[in-house]
Length: 175
Image (cartoon, rainbow, N blue to C red; front, side, top):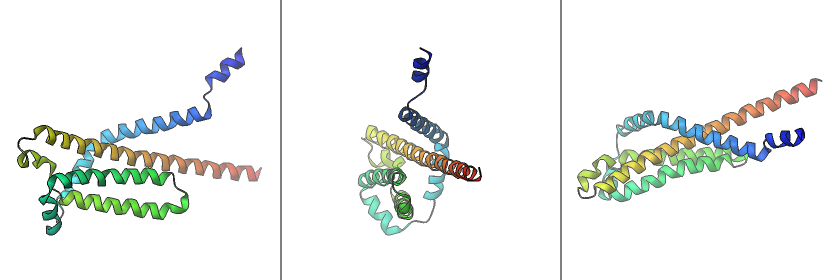
């Protein structure tokens, strides 16, 4: 009977992995919630950068399209980052370049698109849609920040695991 209790109290390796990933995810969301106000400050500072007049005019001509496309650019970065975690190490440079290129596009787009805070002024009879847009940008930025934190957790713990394996292999060779 003692063996059956012991067997059920120890988690199966796949269950431990799932619990670890859930812990990483929840921890990432918690840290993202804490860091999010600072991210908005950084984006406000980026928004103060000089602008390209032609791109700004182009995006201001179709504000709804530019806001919706910002969701696409914003979502592509964490998706590419999470995709990169599942790729072979030989593709690290390619994946890093892809993430940096998407970040450059998203930041450039964000700096030049009309501010979502002006939605109420541009569309006075669409208060609900403007509120949903602002909520969507906040939620999207929070989830993207959580994805970055998650990737940092995974890479950090992978590095610690590789370091532990190296120490273990070295001590096994000396014995």
